Length: 440
Image: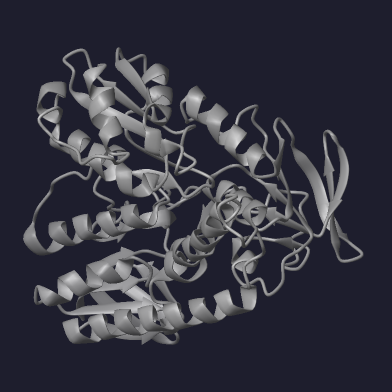
């Protein structure tokens, strides 16, 4: 009998390591040990950011100061780089688990009753069970996914050759990131999305500038367009929409992800579209928890890590501090500029009818924005009536790094006066926070 059994080796492994180091008897079940680290490490954020980093360099080479002009990145070399990177990262995680005393079990585990997991023909028992089985790409009805002409991000990240043309369906993080990736490499890109704007959650100014940025690098935008049918036709993707019929070498389906809930084989744990949990990530069965994508509260890797560490603190140290999901930063590694947000932003504040102050500072006010192709960027701060900073949105180079400034301010509950005590280095884009705060 174990103290804790973890099912799923994505960011769940971080909780297993911490619990084991605190002296608890811990096991982690993962169906493929070589996939420890989960989707983010192997099929998501880590490989995609490597692709995008190289593609951003490609964009910068378009500057007339360079003799080398734009070219496609060499995918065969990139794949070798990724294989090496991911192999080292996986070995490191395995070593961390083993050194901490985590028992690694390879295979499929299913929760069949209170404290009981079916593994092959065995029943494993534990006082606590933590489920972190992640999610899978969602394929809308009418789209005939085949992994060749009609693909998800899983196949895109394994590309050996660039297509001449690609359509992308969906304008979330995956859609926007890969639209920038392909456009930066000179591929004919068409982005289909259902809404009138790229996002109904971003500030309208940012929406407009992201759309302008994508258009500048060659992405053809197709807003307010729904795909009714997509199927393979002579090794191409034939796409039927409410605007007409199109053909592309590939269609990337980027319409979101669905929680993996097949691990639940007992009606004592409620499953809706996702595994149902309370604010402390406990399921409807006491001492059984679900973290990360499988509970669908927030499908972000660093949120999954924060959730499992919150659960482990509760189990091992009897802490019951609620994790504020709204203060967890979100970002899209888009090109040519990245987007990030944290806390309460315009769409939420207006939907909830909350009185707020808003200030927008354009990066075009900085001379160095033109050296970084960042004149379309901006920092937006949100504050309450007492001038406490409640949220931020950023469109800027390295937005995923810059957002940490706002995350710290929001989490610490800083007001305008306290925030203005901070001295930011010059010349940097972080200075925009100080300029924006002065306008509150």
